[in-house]
Amino acid sequence: MYNSPVRTITLGLEDAHPLNSAQITQAATRLECVRGRFSDAGYEVQTVRLSTRPIFDDLADWSARQLLDYARDLQHTLTEVGLGYCSLGPAQAARPGFPLARIDLIPDLLATTSSLNLTVQLADQEHGLRQEAALPTARAILRLAHETAEGFGNFNFAALACVAPGTPFFPAAYHSGPSSLALGLQGAGIVKSVADAWRATGEPRLSLAQISARVQQALEEQARPVVELGQTLAREAGAQFGGIDLSPAPMGEDSIVAAIEAFGYGKLGQYGTLALAAALTRALKSSRLPTCGYCGLMLPVLEDAQLGQRWSEGQVSAHELLLYSTVCGTGLDTIPLPGESSAETIEHLLLDVATLAWRLNKPLSARIFPVPGKRAGESTTFSSPYLTNTLLR
Image 1: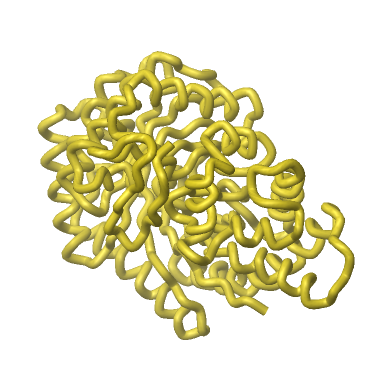
Image 2: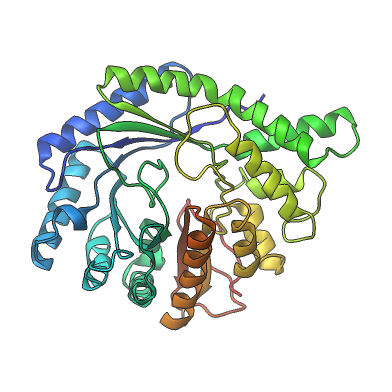
C-alpha cells in the first residue's frame, strides 16, 4: 500500500494581529514539536504552516504604511524561526462595507516578502457575489505576475469564494476561533494505488460506485493513523483538532491526473472523466474521519506533470476545469495564462469561479498565473521546483 506523505501540518492561531515575535516563536516551536512526532512515527512531513486571523479585519484602522512595515517585520521573525509559510487570511471583499482599496495593497505586501500568503474572498453565502471586487483582484494578479520573479508571487495569492476558515491548504488557509491543528495529505498516490491494485487483478473495469467505495476505504486506512496522531498532538499542544483535508493533492510526477486516467475512463477532458471525478469526490466526502477544508479533487495545472501535459495537448482548458469544479474540485488552481492577458479577461474568469461557488454553495478558489514575457503557443520556463512547465494557450 502506498504511504502518503503529510503535505502540511497547519496551526491556526487564535491570537489577533498584530502578532509579536514571542507569539510567532511559540507557534513555530509547537509546529516543530508536532513535525518531530510525525517524523518519529515514520511519516514524511513536507511542510509546517501557520494560519492566522484575517489581517485586514484585525488591523482595519491601520494605514498602508503601517501594514507594509508590519509585513516586513513579520517576515523577519518568520525567517528567524524557520517558518516558510504563513497565511494572513482573506480580504473579505464580499462584505459590502469592505474597502476595495485594500486589495490594491496586497501585491505590495507579497512582493516584499517570501513566506506570507494573502487572498481575496469574492463571494460568501451571507452576502453573495460582490462583482466590483473582481477587477481589483485581477489587477493584483497582474501586478504580482510582473513585479515578482517569474510571476511567482501568484503562488502565494488566490481569489476565494465561499471558503470557510480551517482549511490546511495554502494560500486559502485562514483561521477563526481557538487555536487548532489541521492536516493535509499529498494523497494523489493513494488514489493511484487503488487503480494499480485493480489493474493487477485483471478484473473488468470498475463501476463508479466500486471506485468510490475502494478509494474511500484506502483513504481511511491511510489517513486514520495520521488523524489519531494529530488528535493526540493537538491535545498535548493545548489546541483543538481541526480535521484533515482529504483532497488528494498532487505534486509533479505524483499526479492525480495519472491516477484518474488509470481507472480506464479515458484521458482527462474526455467523456466519462467528469463522472469519474464526481465518484472520487463522493469517496472524499463520505469519509467517516473528521474532515475540514475542500475535501475535493485538486487539479493544479502547474503542480501536476500529467495535467500540465494534458493542458499542452489542448485536452483540457480553463473551461473544462470549471466544469470539473461543479462536481468536485477546488476551482482553478495554478492556471497559466499568456503574460499579455488583460485585467478584464482575468476578472471574467474570477467571476465564473465565484459564481459557481456561490450558486452551488461550495468552496472554490482561483490561482491564476499570467506568465510575463510569454505568449499563447509558447512554453513556460519556470525554474521553481514546485512548478511544472506547459504550453500557454
